[in-house]
Image (cartoon, rainbow, N blue to C red; front, side, top):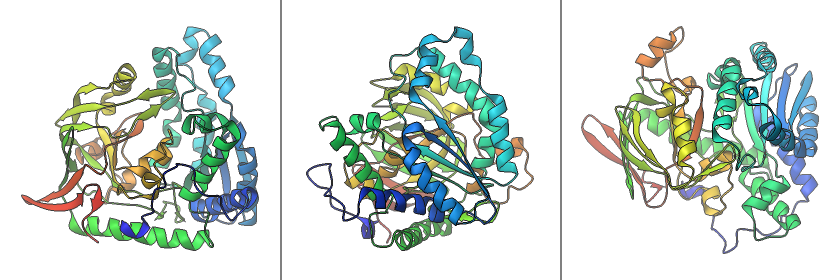
Length: 427
């Protein structure tokens, strides 16, 4: 949408902020709690974060307790210990996952705890490791975490994802800069994309959410049967699930709390029909998955399923992803983002899905969000499948939008222009 468009600079490094780093870090913590989670008095909060995120976790924790949280619990992950497993663990270890921990997290969510994930891990941590072991470990973790993830994908509790800049991530985003400048530049990008580098971040998020809600309302009022993407390497028709619902920005979770799951966010999204996707589509940005770069993806769909897949880099990993289960070669989400979004305009490739998906329209392989459906209460998994809702152990977003992609809405044999050259036609 043009009212949020910013001008890209020649350099990817933005001008210095008028706020100090400590002030911006505190603002991010406040926005994460007040806008992202909207913590309720007495509610518990479960955080997962990399070790480098300790200063940000402390800010989040402080603001959560100020908002009335009863208990904040943080689980930290360490890249080096994760890598040690792939280097030194016996082969049979890669079919094992901490089910006891996943069960505990699912119990916490069922009992009403809010969920926050802080991202910032090394995007290429597992580069050079055995793809088969990575695939097996991912499958084991996905199975163990499924009960907890179902609560999240059903939007039963308030949850949120934010980012923390880390030295190893920054070095990959800004390889031309010295380490300290790269880290500062990545933090600057996170703060700006998260809309905390303004006079009143909470008010800015309220206005931004209103814009996203207006766009979602237009799509819901229009009730398109399908979307058609066209452009270089792309001629794709995405049928929409029966009773699909467009969402974006802040939404009310199943526990009645209005929250913003992703900070930043520029998308509106819905549930495609798992059996009604046809044609060819090419990626417009690289996908970084579990330490592997997957670039120049090209796939062909027939009756909702990918029947051909290739990539110039990481093709073996892509095909392993698609073989995870029956639903992994189908899509569970389609999301629309204008090419003029602030993250796209920054021209920064973050190598992190939270950011890169908000620079481009995208689709997601695997699990659908049942929150983007109406009248599904009490439906069995089989009945959800009949409605077109995809089911899978994975949910992996990859980007298909650019300033060369057009989008039309299809309904009753009619075609309505929605995007031209990556920008919304409707105002």
